[in-house]
Amino acid sequence: MENKKSFMYSYYTIRKIIGFLGILLPIVIVVFNGKFLPSISAFYYSRSAVFFIAILSAFGLLLISYKGYERDKKTELLSDNMITHIGGFAALVVILIPTSFDFGLDKTVQCQLFGHCNKVYSTIHLISAGVFLTSMGWMAFFRFTKGEQTKGKRKKNIFYKSSGIIMWVSIVLLLIRFTTGCSVTEYDVYILETISVFAFGISWLIKGEAIKDIIELKNRVLKKNPKI
Picture (cartoon, rainbow, N blue to C red):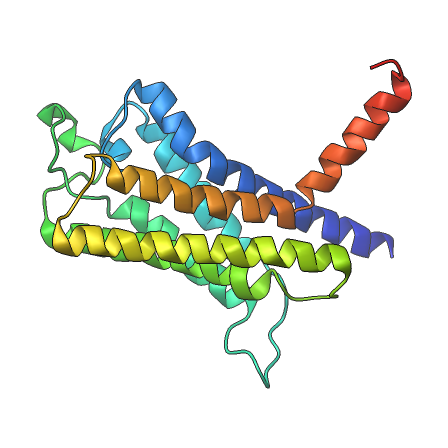
């Protein structure tokens, strides 16, 4: 029993780390760069490159090491392990094959690691980013909703499914943006990517029982300081 608790605690921790990094990514890259760029991927060529690379690397490695629910061989095509492997490898490809250098930054930063102006590489990068977000949407919508259907669980399931839908809708809108060239602002891609990554991050935080941790912390504080 003790081993099982330790095992579950480690997975809750991994989920919280993934969720926290998901929320942190679009914020920290802007803060340390000092200004917005057209997309999250564009920060690869900025002063925030170290955060972009580090967080995406963490996504990749944590997702590859993650093992969740086993699949029902009769009704389910993919297990948690398979989906997170797909998402994890896709996240690593996003780093190893960055977006093309075709926006208004100082040309001297093009030498950044694997920087390039190749449209084929850029297409591979975009597909990999899409696979990452699509697989995370699949995790939220189909896999996080498995398990005992208690009242509290059903409420969480509504959120998980909503998160998955938000990610998928964002991907569709990004696809329309890239194929048609239509835009509302020069930061459309960054905005849609941020919405998708936020939905991804929050769903993993909730799956990691982050809300329960906050409530328990609040109760401990109130117990020690009842006048607060």
